[in-house]
Length: 313
Image 1 (tube, rainbow, N blue to C red):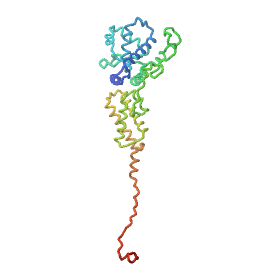
Image 2 (tube, rainbow, N blue to C red; image 1 turned 90 degrees about the vertical axis):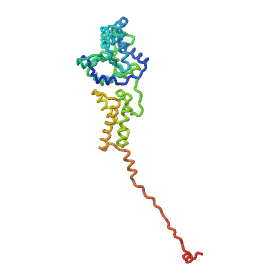
Image 3 (cartoon, rainbow, N blue to C red; image 1 turned 60 degrees about the vertical axis):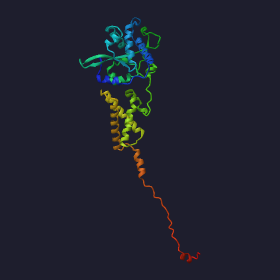
Image 4 (cartoon, helix red, strand yellow; image 1 turned 45 degrees about the vertical axis):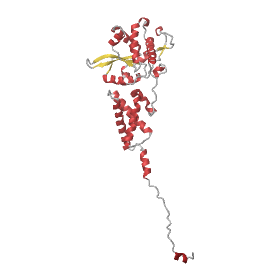
């Protein structure tokens, strides 16, 4: 399989992504879960591979927050006080385990690649990196078939007994509960749009708010379903821009969301696809109310002569 090169603009997008919400203790537990899987997949005298394990420990722990780490070979060798050859052996172990995807940052100077990026397959964020980097097309189609576990957790993988395939992407019940932590529900964002947290984090609330701001600017009030449809189109368009490598700040994302939402709502309003509730109330206000009929009795003063004629004294 050819080396996976990550362009600098895509790497910046990876850096701007929200980290997994967990404390240091949970990260340590998550690290041990991944390392245990690697030990199960790779036949090695782990008791005598202290330095290799130390390098792997450093790589995996750094990757527990975002799902990847990117320490250079020299940095790892210096921090773990070992040789570059040992670092390379540790990287080979990670590749052989099929628990880690090793990509490389693009080097614009030599038009080649430089610092490795270690991406955890079993991490909750792997679905994001798979989508952003197009890993589905770059990875070996048979990798998942090679990643297996013994049907009995107490049986060593070296015993050659029948094994059952249990590897799957994040979200499976087979993954540690720390690895399947769900994003918290964000208020004022429809359930149908909550999944965009995987791409924009908690900023989905601000982005969706810009669509309502666009509706207010147009002076319309429409139903929730229409606003959610416009929201879906807006989020998908923003996601497309990010995947194309456009580096956008949070402020730029909100401004772009407002513009997309405004254009979508204005187009629907022009085509008569939106029922503006305000127009209904305005119509009611313009209906003329029936005039109140008043009966007025005119009272005139009667003279004494008229009273005399009527025989009133």
